[in-house]
Amino acid sequence: MLKDFEGIVKQGSHDERLLLQIDQEKLPRHVAVIMDGNGRWAARRRRPRAAGHRAGAESVRAVVETSARLGIPVLTLYAFSTENWKRPDAEVQALMALLREYMRRELIAIKKNNIRFRVIGRIEELDPDIQRGLHEGMLETAENTGMQLNIGLNYSGRAELIDAIRSIAGAVRRGEVGPGEIDEPMLDRHLYTAGLPDPDLLIRTSGEMRLSNFMLWQVAYSEIYVTDTFWPDFRRTDFLTAILEYQRRERRYGGVLEPTVSGAGPILTRKLGLI
Ligand code: FPP
Image (tube, protein in one colour):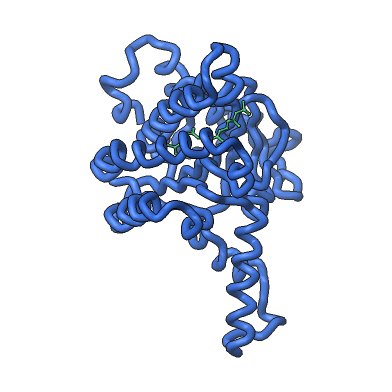
């Protein structure tokens, strides 16, 4: 894994020390991020909110690159919620302009790095020119086999569930499935994230302890990591720190962990070098 950071991370640096601690066998299969705090970051600097979003786009770049180098299979970033339309028009326009610019500038790097790009959300309600850029990005990367990068745009977890339910209701009406056949895997197949593993790790920046309507179905068993760092300050070091914290968690999925030697749980057993 370190090989993928050669020339990127300095020898003897803090990031190198973090990378050395990461267990490649226990990487999250899917990391989802609620990018929050752009406005507060800007306010602290007495700058317009748009400056916070612009700096936040640099964090997007850093986190996408770090995830891809680490070998994380799926990364989902929440960029614009269905509720964000309520913001002042100038801010919405600034966010849309950033998105246009991001697609124009990053598509080459995304393609070069074998990343598959996908938008989750009600994309059809976005400006036609933005839709075009997004569709182009999705089409041109559809065959890529590396990391899957999902961007949540005009996204909300409840809207996603409504869309899934409408789609299942259509199938029931056409007689393709009976109501009794509706189960969790079927609902999964009708979500925007169909075919992807649920997030193992959900990161939220800027200290807020909320889900904000993000992937409500999929985060049922996700480990939640909240940091006080504002999104524009959240870069490689912060991401590696979050991964390490995730790797220290014990996941039980509502059950109990079987002790592997008398009295010693897996973490202790691992420390003892027994597994
Ligand atoms: C939350 O900060 C952030 C957003 C609503 C937008 C996130 C967008 C970016 C990082 C810009 C670029 C994205 C891409 C994919 C190119 P906030 O404005 O809610 O901050 P506050 O809570 O401090 O006001």
